[in-house]
Amino acid sequence: MTVGKSSLSQAERYTSGALVWRLLLLAWRFRWDCLVSLALSVVLLLLGLGGLQLLGVIIDIIRHALDPAQPAPRFPLGWQPPVNWPPLRVVGLLAFGILTQALLRAYLTYQYNMVTARLTQGEIVPELRTQLYAKLQRLSFGFFDQHGSNSIFNRVTGDVQNTRLFVDGVLLQGLNLLLTLAAYAVFMWRIHPGLTVACLSVTGPLWWLAHYYSARLRPGYLKNRELTDQMVLRFSETVKGMQTVKGFAAEAQVARHFATANAAVSNQQRRIFWDLSVFTPGTQMLSQLSLVILFAYGGWLYLEDRIALGAGLVVFAGLLQQFTAQVANLATIANSVQQSLAAARRVFEVLDTPVEVADKPNAPAPERLRGEFVFDRVTFGYLPGKPVLADVSFTVQPGQVIGIFGLAGAGKSTLLSLLPRFYDPQQGRILVDGRDLRDWQLDGYRRQIGMVYQESFLFSNTVAANIAFGHPHAGRDEIEAAAKLASAHDFILALPQGYETVLGESGVDLSGGQRQRLALARALLLRPAVLLLDDPTAAVDARTENEIVAALRTAMAGRTTFVVSNRLSLLRQADQVLVLDDGHLVDVGHHDRLVRWPGIYRETALLQLMDLQPTGGGR
Image 1 (tube, one colour):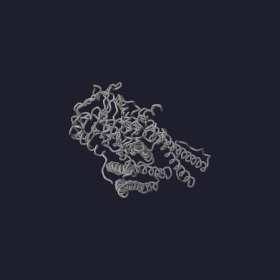
Image 2 (cartoon, rainbow, N blue to C red):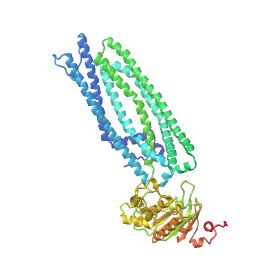
Image 3 (spheres, rainbow, N blue to C red):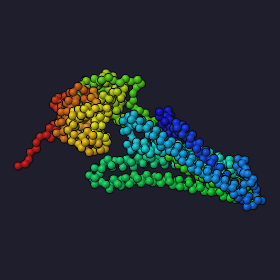
């Protein structure tokens, strides 16, 4: 269930009111813990009021004992101590009551903190992260083309944390604030209405100040999250490209770039803190003004004997102090409101992103694919109006090996990415076994496709687990058979723990050729009906290339295979080669014909043959 999904337009969806409504729906899903937290807040409030009242009674008891002419104390809840009790015993009993309520408040405060922590860190944060992660798995590649990994990481980590701040830092704290202010106001009114009105006359400016700064802070928080994305991008790129950085002796340069990005975040945060630093003293000044009114007007009332000292003026002062302290919390709540709204917008943007490549209702999962493909006037581009492939048409028979050739930027990898339906054509259609690819059930279709990319990704796990990634229940015999087919078995056995060797991040402890062969084994383990190879020999030496090509001859038998490559050793294996030039299919044919026909294929083949010729020179 997605949190608060809305059918509003993009502009309306992320207004403050719409975001607050969706965050309230989020809190409603965890309403029982929210209610428990509020109930504990009410009990803590009542205990605090009871403690203040007992303190006032103790002062009046002592004052009456010292001067019997003073008014007798009024005990809470209509209770009267036995007439034969000395004042010291009564004071001792009331002091024990204050101590008891203090201990009970300490215990309930602990319970309140535990409930709130369980609500936010144990329920809301994991739920939001799970929703974000699950949505990211379903989003199309177009989303990841538009958003960098740094922005996605920030949304799943920092923005989720700031979003939950609405529940504990705004909703619960805000309701607690309203209940507390209402209770204190009622108790002060019971002590003296006129003094209450006079002291609380400053709350109007306080509310206006909170509203003004709340609206002022939000744009700053949105900008701060964007600058943080840029800083994380600088950091992650430097770590991933450390070899390049050191190779060009550019450590000082990248350090300066990171310092600039870091300073931008710091400066933006400083502007937010500056606003808060003005807001907080403003609220404190207005709060202190209420105390001035209390001492002036309340002192006059006491001198005129219109208010008691303990249960009247002292308790009123305690209530007013707590009241103004709660009003001062408006600064924190206003800050939390804008911080959570800025983060919630970025979280909901991901949750609201439409899944561009999705199953049609009741789409059937294909049986074992025969492997017939028809491209019917397919046009596709990553940006509107800029096609990478234009009006491409060709037919592939089941079991054929299709080479895809072209210069850099011709659209080879893009064509390959359409086959597993990472993207949908913007014009035209792709037929698989006589049916539009968009009519097949997506997961069932993709499970019959094995893929090896130009830059193969390996997980921080054992070699065996990496090979079995798409088939986690495969037995060791199946894993080893796939590794042998990919010419990977021998080098795996030479690793410290063989198939149980744990690889470093992205297989950093393996050579490029070794990573490529593991990726090939991973694809072959699925026994796919269709095999997609994106330049699988690009990162290997000549000897390893020959081994992989020999293995591929067996792997490609009986299955439709698409091979993106400019290497003649692979293209010779193809039944036909698609020649792409600037997004257009300019030629189709077998290698033997294409090398004799004028064009970019023949020119590339001649250049490769010239590179293989021995050079002259020497004595």
